[in-house]
Image (tube, rainbow, N blue to C red; front, side, top):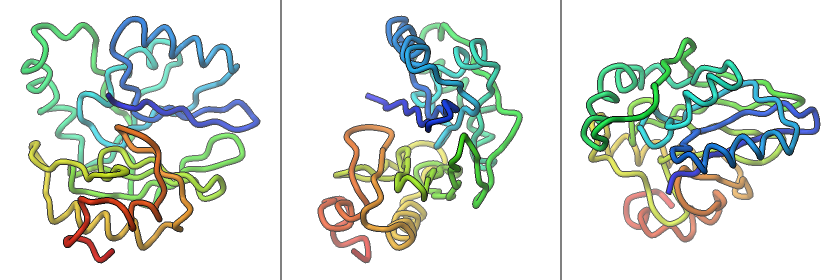
Length: 207
């Protein structure tokens, strides 16, 4: 199951990350939560451009006027590969797939409320995979680069195992051990826990 994340602060400004809400009930609950919390979505971000992380992009565009933002290196997935993949897994995909107008760059800072997210390019699962890191809050969003007990697969078009391992090693050196990591699938974890307990890194990572 894909994890959709919403991050906000005391101002009510919110950033939506990987809006994968597909079923009608999921979409209703998602909008209801935003309304109940009185949030004002200001950005729609993708950790990467695989289909399960963007099922709800049309909903966010129609409801809040936001278009998805993804790293430039995943532009070709959005424009060329995504329709092919959608045709493989759906007889008829019921929603539009909005295209980005803005492409994220490594090191870019995304402000919202009194906080900001930093874009960290972590290719491997896809060429344009990124982490979003909020230093003030001590949290990061890893997409499908790394999970609590596994790493992202690299058998999809554009995947590269060596790149993925380099990206994970870079992130594990860069971010503090107490950084809470919210992956694209599964439970939250920390950088320290990934270093010490992730079985997929044994023998491959420097940790």
